[in-house]
Length: 350
Image 1 (cartoon, rainbow, N blue to C red):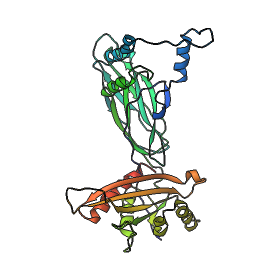
Image 2: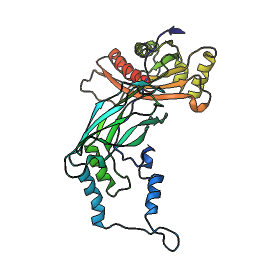
Image 3: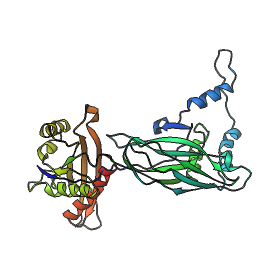
Image 4: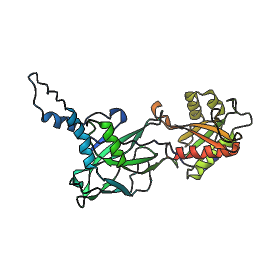
């Protein structure tokens, strides 16, 4: 096996950040649980209602004017509200804290509702589904430090990141997610929001690993001319990102068979006494469905999986998965572009 004693980066594509309301001082906020109340809200709500004869709280229905007042009241609160992220911390490494907090400057119109009556909801990446790449976000509610009725600031120091990611953090005006017209209020909150980058690199740059890419021809069959071009190009991209103790190896047969368990066991047997931690493997293939303005362009798809060779359980075997597309004027250009994208995914995803 040809080993190169330096390596590159790691990222996984992150996700778009939608605007969600906060419902407590600090709470995990997953999209599927968007409509739930926090325990604190439930307690305060129930304490304000008297029980019926059967011990159950009465059902209180709001009329149309009351329903509309929720949205109207929110519009008054955010009238002229502006937020600007003035300080963004430098990217950090997975499991290491950011060195400085985010700082946000806030201002609004002097319409009689003081800025001190507003809270800001902060939404940031918290975890990732390895198989789907879906990001789960956490939210935190912060009281504005108002210097006057129309100006103020907030500082936000994220918790120590548990994942590597190239994502974003969103600041938006807080509203109760149980409010009527939730959709309309959420859209209005987004208009007054501000975003900033949230970048966390992998902590495995010095862990050591192997890259193995199988090239497929236009018919989807393994290339007979060898698979060094794509594999070595991706390796050099990773190497250039600061990885160490990384090299190429050939797992073409196992990759072609498509059996992840067999591939993993083969790697374990081959590197039983090695110090390597990860194996990046996958395929580069032609994108037969792509349509380019230039008929001579080459369109490729790259699909890679990163395995943890040191995994203690089956659930820990896969570190991340990624898929990217790229176009080039020729095959070499397409491979270069595809390798650049996948290397970035490795840096911010593994």
